Every structure is written in structure tokens, then in C-alpha cells.
Length: 71
Image 1 (cartoon, one colour):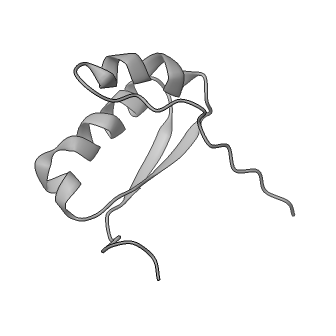
Image 2: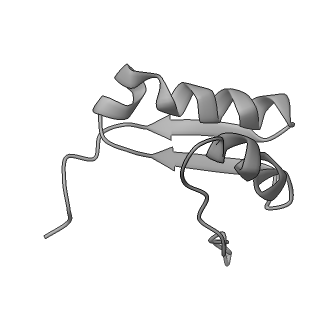
Image 3: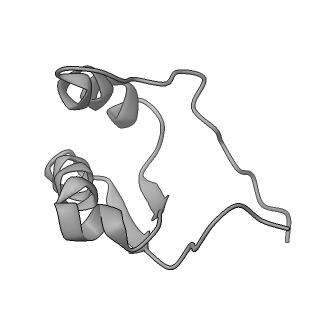
């Protein structure tokens, strides 16, 4: 079975980026995977993004085991 991966065409950064990203996230799809290193969940950043997604009906999972740039 074929699969489709949709990459957002917009990167939101800076002050209040999460609020700006909310509109973009809700228009992108219904499922998401947050891929990050172990530090971001400890800082609470991935939790904020995951909560925003879940509050907007987007199922998401966090994979926090990336340790650096790929070889």
C-alpha cells in the first residue's frame, strides 16, 4: 500500500510562533509525529506542541530519541 508524507511549506519561529503555527497545523492533517532529541521534551517544548495539536483534534506521538545529524 502506498503512503503519502506531507511536509509543511511554512516554518514558524520566534516569539509567539506556537500561536502562529496553530492555524497552519490544523490545516495540515489529522496525525503528526514529532521527531526530536531528548532535550526538547525535558524543556517542555514538545509537550506544548503536542497539547496544541491534541486540542485541535490532531493525534500525535513524540519520538525523542534522535541523537544528532544522520551519517
